[in-house]
Image (cartoon, rainbow, N blue to C red; front, side, top):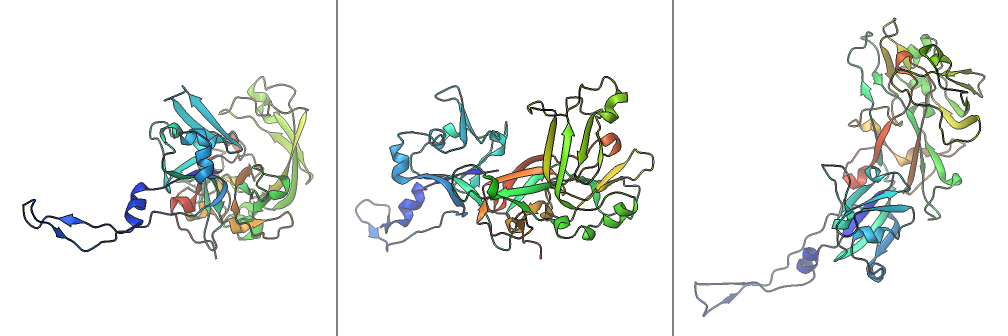
Length: 380
């Protein structure tokens, strides 16, 4: 996710830092005499949180646009859409590459803006008067620090029947991919994507759940060049009896089965926008991490990976945060990226969990930790 970073030039800072000004005070309560005080210089640094600009409108360029609000200016950025609700005086929101206004962060002089009522920011309210620059920025890769956090809805189990079990609950890990827009064309090209090498990428046997899940008979292998093909169902299930044979699939590891329909999601699972009768995905498949702890199929626990995946850790924990330096190429070699412009996430575990349904990564957003001033060291 990209954040729109709006940098405002403070008039007050300009006035008090640009020169020396004499101050005057009355010695007595009279207009007939004054006392001149010594010259005083007052200076203060504005809050600065450094970013790597991808697209910038500033100075003379901004003036030549002949526009009056931030909403009008950002229309000139590639990949940005402004929705105008009502013309002059109406609500104006921004989204980047059709991701929606709720997935775009707007910062005013380093301070994140928000709306407690609906969560979106009206850019039409911000004038370009005294504006230094409007910037669409990159999440910076800071050495030794975590750089961004993927927000999701993972949580811990509070009644696991196994009191000695490792940490788990509803942890549905997603593999994270990042891209830096090296050629500045505003789109993520195929050769710009890299995968975050998280804990199981490094060594799946070190996961705290590894032996427990392995002993239960589940697949704890990591497959780097995994492919899975889904087949479009001929029709939607007519009854619950057909749920278990809903969408057939096979992978390049010789496995095949069905994606099961469950009671919570009654819509069509197969994407209606695709053409053809099958759909293939390629990527990394993580070790299975879930098991039925009740023995009766009523209490499933999805165990937590150590770090580096989406929807795997509670949002407040350090290990929900990601270091861009963990990015690797398709050969598993670490790469040096100055930052990240694009992020994509896909479900990493192929596993059915009884009445809960399949493991499916669910995310709610992404945060740039440096813009927010959150300092988290990387893992040693």
